[in-house]
Length: 296
Image (cartoon, rainbow, N blue to C red; front, side):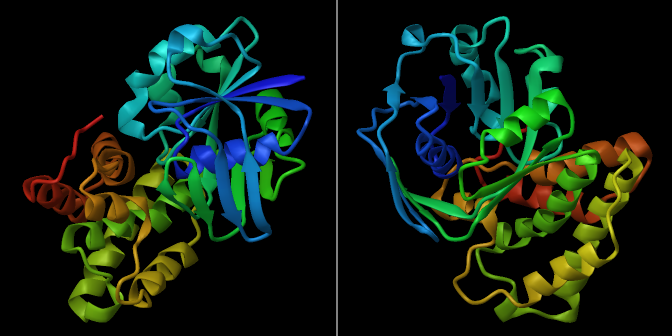
C-alpha cells in the first residue's frame, strides 16, 4: 500500500486527492485547516467521490511515502508543521503550485533532492469544502528522473495525464507565459475581450514578451507561437469570464499569487539585466489598488 498525504484540499488538491483515492492501492490522507466529511468532484467523466482520512492537526500525522503540496505559493511556511510529521527518510515531496520556483520555495523545509516540482493544468473550481467542479482533463508535467517518473506513475489510473519531461524548465515557463497576462483582468476586474483595443493588446503582448525573454534567459525553450496564442486568448475572452486563479482570487477578495506569476518575471529579469516595465507597472498598480498581495 502506497501512502499519500495531500496538503491543501482546495480545487487542485481536492481533485488530485479524489482521483488518487479511486485506486485501492493508495491510502490517501488529506491535511486540511477545517474538517471534511468527503470529497465530491464533478469531472468530464462523471462524478467521483472519495472518503480519505482527513486531519486538521499536524500532531496526528504519520510518515508517508509521498506528500503532495497543493497550497498557494505564499502559504509555503504554513506547511512546515505538516512536513515535519509527514516526511521520513524515504518520503518524497511533490510541489504542485504555480510559478517556476518550486524547489527554491521549499528547499529550506525538505532536502532538494527529494522535492519534485510539478507543473499542472487542471481547470477546477471549488464551490464549498470538498465540493469541486473539474471542467477539463488535467495535465501534469514533472522532471524526468527517478522521482519524477515515480510521481507520474501515481496518476496512471486516473484521468489526469502525467508525464516526465527531460526539459521540464520549458514546461513551467511556457505555462507562465500563458498565464502572466491574467494580471490585466485581475487589475481591471473585467475580461479583456469586451474592452479590447490596440493599446490593450500592446500591454498584454508586452507582458508576455517580457516573460518569454526572461524565461529564455533562464534556459527555457519557448516558441514564438506562445506569445500570439496568449494574446489571442485574451482578445477572445468573453464578458464575465474569469482569467485563471489570480483573477478569481481578486474577485473573491483573497490573497493573490502575484509574486509567483508576475513578480518573479521582474525579479529574474533584474538578475539577467532584462527590462520588464509592463510586469513591473502592473504588479505595482495591483498592490496600490489595495489588493491583499504579499511578496513571497
